[in-house]
Structures are given as structure tokens and as C-alpha cells.
Amino acid sequence: MTRKDYEIIARTFRAYTDADKAGEATQQATTGHYKYTQSDTDRARASRLLLLANTLANSMKQDNPNFNRDTFLKACGL
Image (cartoon, rainbow, N blue to C red; front, side, top):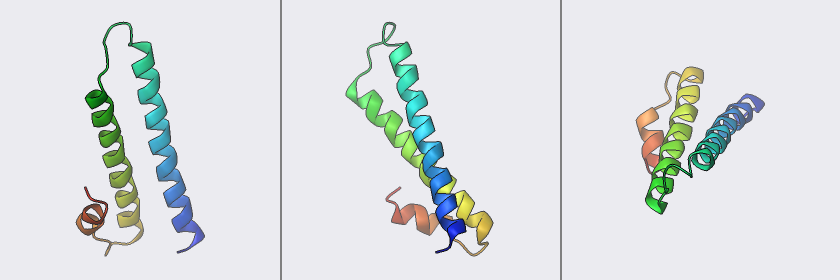
């Protein structure tokens, strides 16, 4: 792996953590209007994990046309 690879991964994780923080902020802001359940939280996190994996896969595909997104996502358990 090269520095470029590490930068792609770091940017992807940054996007994921930003989305996670935004989700938490939205949840906190609307707590008075809706009681979130654990399954709501789990679904939101699963959605953000899928976003993370897809964003990383898209970046890798742009970098390497031979990169197989489906194989990568399957390896991620998605």
C-alpha cells in the first residue's frame, strides 16, 4: 500500500465519522419528538457502515479499474 492508499482510507473513515456524528446530533435534536429504539440506532449504524464500505470501494475502483467492488463488499460482509 502507498501513502495514497492510506489517504483514501483516512478520507473514507472521516466521511463515516462525520456522518455518524451528524446522525447522533440529529437524534439528540429530535429526542423530544421521537423516542429512538435500539433497533433504530442499529439500523442507522448499519446504514452508515454500508456508506463507509461503498465510499471506500468507489475510491478504490477509481484508482484501479480492475478493482472488484462486489468482491470487496462481500469480503466486508455486506
